[in-house]
Image (cartoon, rainbow, N blue to C red; front, side, top):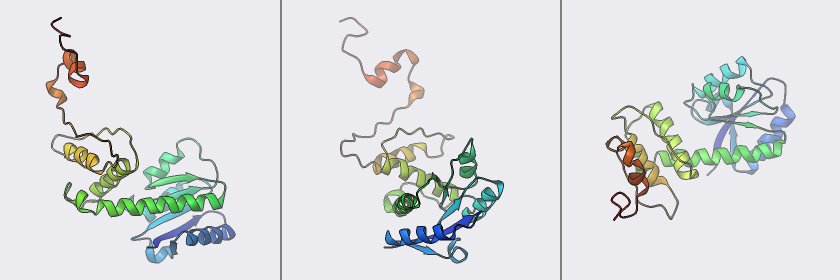
Length: 212
């Protein structure tokens, strides 16, 4: 099934490169749509040669403050905290490139990954674990699917008491695709004293404390 995406260029005229990127995306089953007609509901790609207040303002508008998935592609190196400015303005990801053929492949890979993430977020496994329709929850669920399904990274879950941290941990374990994963072990660290933390976490040999 083809993936729909809109493309928006900010700054200098890049019409020849624009046409080249569109052709390359079409070859990879990416359907490029009109920005005006599809920006409210589909993922999008913004091209820019620099990070400016104008770019950040347009990014906020087109991403609806992060509600829509938007990939920002910069054809020049980004300095300082410019990437964080783009992320805070609503970018879902940022790519820096020099070759248009390479960036087209990277764009297609990102869009296909987002398609899988969105499909999994709407799956019974996720929907039956964490119930809610708020944009904040949907953003968290996408992050959970990304880290659980596509990486083997460690995860630190923070939140107030009763916000569902244990539910998120269970969901991450359920989505983990590793065949050798063990059972999920829940441990209440508030009941462990510092002196016994080593043995509680990692075990101990028989007689280690009594000498017998």
